[in-house]
Image (cartoon, rainbow, N blue to C red):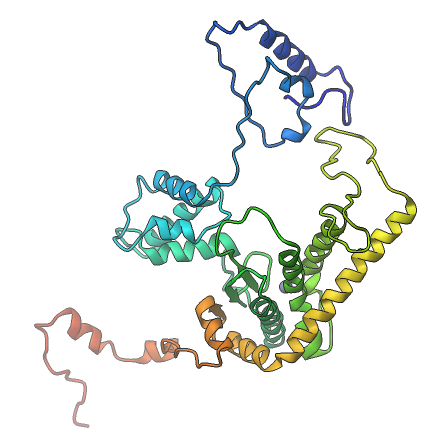
Length: 379
Ligand code: ZN
């Protein structure tokens, strides 16, 4: 309601503006001893009408950022109030492992964990339920029913392996939390980074590491299969956006220097200018395009050569992914150190399980019924 008046699409005499005018008038009428406190909240402080923020109207501004470690722990406490927890759940560890989560994410995490626990008929929500829930919230729900061809699986394994390896090799990158080739949400595979701690600013090196990491997937595909797929479209969008912001917003380009170009947040429907203000010449626009493009080409080549030099590690990660489908941070560390992975918990093939006699289970269930089976009949 407090949006900038007379901006954006539509006329200036609409109901919302009338309401805002009235609100401003009423606020001017409050005396300081009347004991009336007016509180309002917005997630778009940038489009507020300046009149609202003048002295005597909303006097005090309280910024609510993403919660920090302590904040997350307190938010978790609120949401687990009515959830029975197992003894191994430690909210501090949980809060430590969820940097960047906001209140809604944490609530979602608790709900998902409770659902997972209910699905396995548990009385209490255990730590591993929270771990599963975290993956679900971070990576999206697994789509195990989706059938992928062997070829798609191989390409995905190398693609995700490329992301993970570039992430592991660049020192400024966030630690790789998990990499999987089980389709989740819209993606065929996911590599998830998780910052080790709360972060409030990004350095140039960190942004470059993020672009390198985004390029790792396609670079691995090109390196191994010598062909390109459509699977990297999303990565390229992200990389281009980051490079553009480096040049135009953060002034991190050596050639163009500490200058910002253009204003973002000019969404016409949220109400500012109808025409985007362009504060630079056509010549600069061309330089910006060239700079962004050069940055992306350079980083793609860098990601590719990084993978080329560590081809053996890429192969090992891809093979391990094809075998296990998911690798977590600890397993990736083992691969990087050249150590063998712990053996898989030997899965019993379903056909074997079905045809196997139910004898051992029965004797376990009824210990008194230890009568020798009459099965080996003399033929
Ligand atoms: Zn990718």
